[in-house]
Image (cartoon, rainbow, N blue to C red; front, side, top):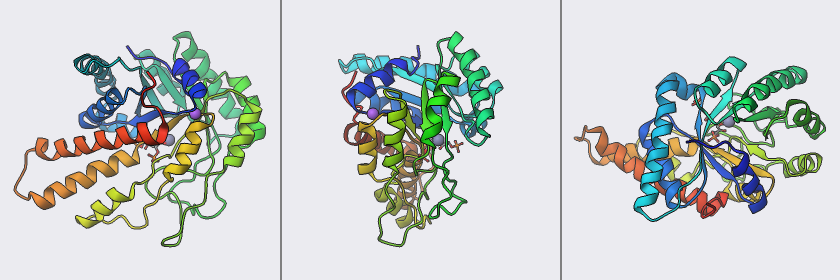
Length: 321
Ligand code: G3H
Ligand code: 13P
Ligand code: NA
Ligand code: ZN
């Protein structure tokens, strides 16, 4: 079955690495995530977002996740590797009812994202989810601080960074198992506005350090952690795409975060870019093919490579099981 995040985060904290939290909406992404994590012997958190539930149906995704646990076992046995811990997590839950429905349905972890609410309302809804989830041994991620959206001017000070003065009170009052924070990342492929050829600003590690001091030993989560890998952005643009000024978080910044109290790193966009790049390349080179397996297969193979590299070279989660 699925495991919750407790043991995963304890080991990650002590080992100075971060567990990958990869989003999936379809079979090929799920196969790639599982294959890469078995091959690299990494724990993994499978994330289901609201968009994924709307696209693929919560029931189907939940049983695909269950199927993935069996697939992972078979794959590990066939390669004489160890079984890996797999967590099924609701990404950005926005109501108690949604979190409850995922908990009742067999998810082993949920996020209640009350970060847009006034502080006391965020505390209240998060505590409500925690009280329910903990009865079923399901872990809960809360969030403080707001990640800048792509529609905002991310170059200005519109990020609402997590206030370190709030974290101790929030964790105490809610009983959450992990805390997502805002230190300068954002979702999607356009995380920073920078002049051509210039580096994006570094993440606010000073804020992270202050947070670590206020809640020592507590697992932190980093959202919006795709690197928007240039290789795939370039491939997309070379084969007819139009992604201008796409930019993400550098892998060096992520390596540094993974060594800290950050125990979970969320990556979705990089997987989307890999699939799109390989599919565009395939169609450019094979205009007469029309069997989805012909173009989804190479996309899946490339995804496996990308996830394996993340686990080994960026998050440090490889060979930890
Ligand atoms: O939180 C953002 C994730 O990348 C999920 O996005 O709602 O489009 O599936 P989505
Ligand atoms: P990216 O868009 O950077 O991949 O972030 C994903 C995420 O935070 C999912 O919750
Ligand atoms: Na860590
Ligand atoms: Zn997120």
